[in-house]
Length: 345
Image (cartoon, rainbow, N blue to C red):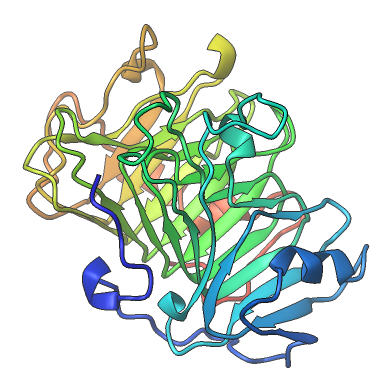
């Protein structure tokens, strides 16, 4: 597998990162220097906060797993570099990596960063899982999560997510529990099912990059497991889907049914988005015995060489599109409106 140079914008084809609408609106409550454990700073943060507690992180690579517990609410990780590439929070374990007791970490346990605290925000930094598949042929289960989310009302503004399989696990505390996450001007990179889970997740103006893993198929962008009671799964609005993989070798997604849960009826809507020719037709794939046609997959007014209209690429009508805007996905019963720019996309 081709490895990445974490601090090189050119190596990753970095997007142009606009300034946040509320950048530096609050001074950091604590400053973190390279060599400091991010986990130790999280542990020292106040519990049960109802206003933001800003952790300013100076440029550097911060190694080690980070877990934000449920009682650490309103935390913000703010990268203080010029670009998201300048601050990297990373770990390197996979599903099959063994713990000290000899048991595997599992997919959830592999996460470099796990977010259980509500109202978390990350700005201008990179989360990565640096597990090297080629260096560990003895490990069969290679899922390696960069970020696992379980909490509600999470915001990621100009953040990069870097891994291979299962990069970004957007989840909730239980099936049927709503957890919302908003990604704006972000970059997500991976190969197999690299955006997956049952959360409500909105990606606005993001670049979603599929790696070339030298196989056919080369991968799947999404694997939603949205609960049947949740009308809102994944929404990609005005994004760019790019890849170095050959034409027609990547699928937009496939429906994940954890533990064969029949009520996991995944939803993914991709609208007004540029799609590269790595996406073919059909664009959606079955997942084992679970057919993609029974999931809630749709597109709307996409463009680019990989954007096609055919019988096996369902399209929203104009009326359906009007009911599936960013605000519809995020509003919820509390009328949540994230503060990083407009939620109009």
